[in-house]
Amino acid sequence: MSKCNINSHIICHVDTCKFHCNGDDHCSLESIRVGTHEKNPTGAQCTDCQSFQLK
Image (cartoon, rainbow, N blue to C red):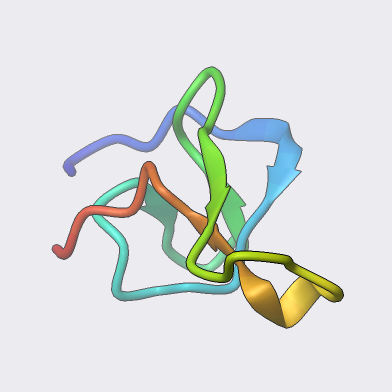
């Protein structure tokens, strides 16, 4: 991604994601989809950003 359009409403620390704004720790997407890999999630560690794409 040559120029990152920072979305200041989505903080992200996953720098291996295609949509991560390097050096700023924000996402460039307008919105993200959050899901889970658990049948009955009980904490934040059970959730996933389903908008993630590997750089």
